[in-house]
Image (cartoon, rainbow, N blue to C red):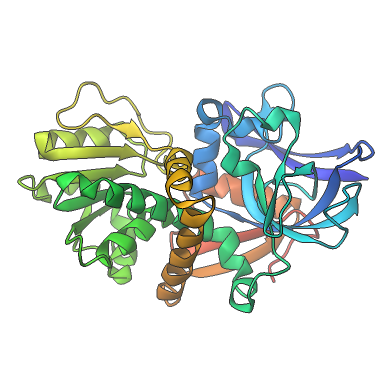
Length: 366
């Protein structure tokens, strides 16, 4: 059995290559999965940008200067040497951009299993868990495409939102979101906007070309372009959430709002090529938000999986609410995947469109 994979040069994300390689025979306890489909978003570019810091490159190692950017998708077990995971089982989780992958299931229960491959054990555990989908309710099964493209991002939105709730919004009266057109960004805006008890104003920052899209979502009380940071009300205690990764944007918000920035979370890198240096800034120190850490805290308080269950329910609500402003297109084949990834790196995919892809098959959209 062989697999076809997309490799990306870690130091130059625009340089990609399609690699075909032979897979070794399965060892005892392993399963071979055929990857049916996966979502591709700016979040995957963020995985690549922070791949060395967080360890994303290590989940599916490549060779030399190359890496495999992980994605969220569905796969079917086509060969099994596991006593607990049969051929034909359909799973959802963190996969490579490839036609096939080998997993080593352990800690198996009715809902999920954990990939116990030795190289993955030092890495954040959230990404080692695969959901078994055979008992999913019909509405969840019917939302497979959205689950690939949107649910992982909206799950991050919900974890962020819950982090703010757990900290009573740090006493803030408004939440400012940079790159509000990103899926994680407008997902967070939706959650804060619909929490009337919290009473937070939501301010979305975006590029001029995305203002109309963000306004159409109707989840921000105020939408401004990046050159109009001065229009933000600096008198209010403010949570700042940066999805852009742009040092100038972070600096502009902090210098304008000043000491009233009571919490500053760095989440994504949609503007990944911009200068990320910030220097000393007034207000709360910008800190990278690592969702698995908060998930771990809630798992201890509420029980394993409860927070993620809430996040998935919220993701379904957000997905339903944007049905008229957002569409998902599917394209198949290695060339299509390679093209789509480079387009994302070049910021050429509009925020109103989601990409569902497969390395299987040939070019063409269906």
